[in-house]
Length: 83
Image (cartoon, rainbow, N blue to C red; front, side, top):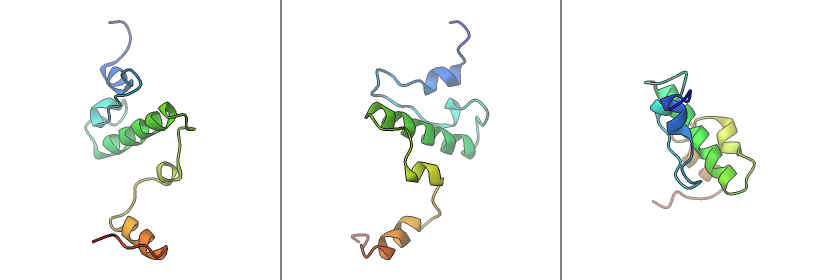
């Protein structure tokens, strides 16, 4: 009830322990892959904040990784993928 929209309500953490992401939780990009990615980043920030963090991390600031980027990063640092 009131003026809260459904996406805003869905995006609100529940009891500080349940964080919902998905394109339906965005205001401006509902129904799009961009909205799904954006909401995932928002939920990740909420998780970090709930754990006492600042709400950002290098991974979130850098944006989505390209396929294989994690493998290349591990190789560059001398770590294998474990496969």
